[in-house]
Length: 449
Image (cartoon, rainbow, N blue to C red):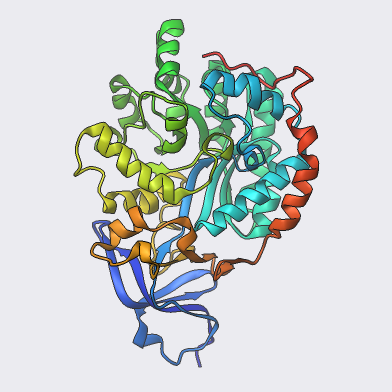
């Protein structure tokens, strides 16, 4: 007799994709999970009477691929709301970089725990993180059950040790947590990492088959400053230093200009961009990620939040809705970006952005069972005339009932199973006075693009 499945979810609507990557909603369906992998997507009647270690009756709910936060700084959840209503330069120099000079490994652990709890509750199953003391973040990911692409950030001001530490971290943690952790080299940005270090990073990435995750062309000011000082855009810096010959995830890219597009289109590696629109609105940046232009040259754009210190939340549902709305406004075209296109960015394109295409991002046999169950019975999601529009523009993070990673339930009926949030908050509150002290006059870096 066949052994019991690990998990069966039944009676739900399931978001799948056809051969052309179009979203297809299967009603009264079931998902069968075995050994952390989707074994079957079928109709609910076909699983009646089957045995499973876990069984979820999901009537009234939609099962989606787990959301992916393609660029964040999870430990910065500890700094949420600390630096408000400031321009970018003051945000970095006057608050964030002075405070980050106080960070201890325990602060990083607590911030990461808080962030992971928030993301699990919001249906995020995977995140790409770029920060310091990343051994602590890796431990949190392993313990709480999420999936992550992790990179130890560095500046040229640290000397060769920063780059070496980033490589050591990437090699040591690659494939850990049962394969749920992948790793990247993480130079901070072209304005804090010089050309020699970027070129060396590109060489290490090729030698060790590692991707690169960095900030570049974050805003138009950075692009204009780079042109004025060096005669090249930040994307041209990535090209001439060989970063675009690697698999690279570029955070933000609101400063990408038309002359950059051919370089991105013909990059030798897998190039992707992560967009986090809420922060751009807060900083009053005049441009946003050129999603349509990037789509036209085949560069995937994944959804992101950036850190909670700039975005105030790690809500990828909000990023999905804002991306759609801001793109409509920017392009002057209500037919772009549609709800189905937004779901494509939230699923398949985000999986590509973090290098996990074929593993996550869709619900199909052979893919890892990273799933979220969304309750659409609330008054704010009824009636449903267009399910894609309901998910993008009406549903909220709080509508996520259950979150599953690798077939393991991390939250069930809104109850977190792997993180003790009250204990995390209690300890973090005790540590905050020392963490946020700026009286020492230090900062880890100078922002001045």
